[in-house]
Image 1: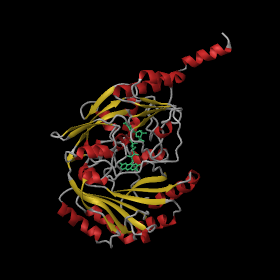
Image 2: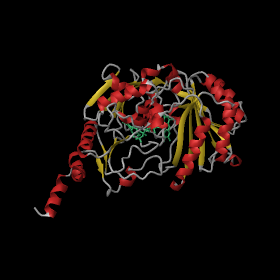
Image 3: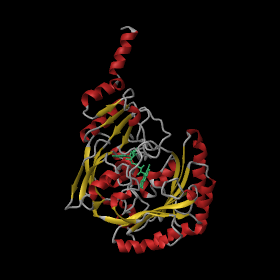
Image 4: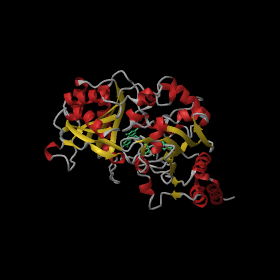
Length: 470
Ligand SMILES: Cc1cc2nc3c(=O)[nH]c(=O)nc-3n(C[C@H](O)[C@H](O)[C@H](O)COP(=O)(O)OP(=O)(O)OC[C@H]3O[C@@H](n4cnc5c(N)ncnc54)[C@H](O)[C@@H]3O)c2cc1C
């Protein structure tokens, strides 16, 4: 056989070369290759500054196709990433040189209004689900942003506006359908494959592709909530946190300490000054909500007060499709934010040269804290306050500067709680992944990983290596 023939034969039998034609023939879902017009948009994530070029993006149409893509990844040896809403902080969901299993076309939602449950396909966003459930006066708690995918958010835990009233998103997860590394489709719940059900409640995308989630829904009609802008002084920050901790658990609060953005509804003289942009949600009677939020309003003369009775989905305002900031961030838990911690926050923010710098403070507790630590793979039930510090910037060449800035900021805030929330981890390294799964949680996750994914097929994530060491 001459060299050209042998090369041609090799090419034909190389599963990678055959991949795209094979996918196009065999799949009903959308197959997007590098020379397709949609390729660049399809590989774009929420965050900018990542330039991953997958070999192919498969926008699957159903669970059967998910299982086939998983098998194909094994056969070809290409890396495999799972993409739902594309909000991965580090771009894990778009495999550079690999296969992207894109679930964004799987967005069926079946709501059982009477039973107050819903089966949701993983390609739905938090906003889409929330809007559809609200048509029945019902809600499941997700995060603070409507465009985040329920796929990634739920498998990592899910901390949002109902966290103190109803717990994490995973605390409302009743069952799921999971495609495992060997291509099997498994139903998981408290009685069926309970180890896998435990692991997908906080363990991230390490254990398989969740194609459908069954959630509990709560009666949430109108809420009393919205944005409240206050001047950020050390006293106001510390008092805000103290009030949020002491408030009834109907109230969940997020305080973003940051320079006031040039939003049209903010007075021009405030732009660039440090403010608390607070997001408040009181789930309950409007009059009670007013009296719970009154002391927050009294902390200082509000710069802008948009807290009002609203339909719950209004908490997710429309977002700009073409907004792709580059971010450096760190996540942590702290036990207290008193005046001196607030000073540290203000000093660091003042020193930043970033386009936007922020310290996001989320007061936890309530229903989330009542779930036993070992009940799910999210083990930070006793953590008091989540802190995320971030710098948003434009020029990728500034990465080192802002990574150093966030690292120093986080170091200065460090207290006794060494934990980390997996969904906000950036490129923090193995020690911080370990910190996301303290104590026995880590060992148990590694054992379950060894059982369901011994070859670590699902490794494009905050990775938990299988107990057998692969
Ligand atoms: C602007 C913004 C706001 C945020 N706010 C919050 C918040 O308030 N609360 C909160 O808890 N988190 C929040 N997050 C973090 C968010 O939960 C994570 O980034 C999450 O992974 C995003 O999910 P996704 O489906 O959009 O992401 P993708 O990029 O699609 O996926 C990220 C990773 O999740 C895993 N994954 C995704 N889908 C599946 C699936 N179907 N089955 C198995 N694994 C899967 C994979 O490992 C994947 O690499 C926020 C993130 C951003 C960017």
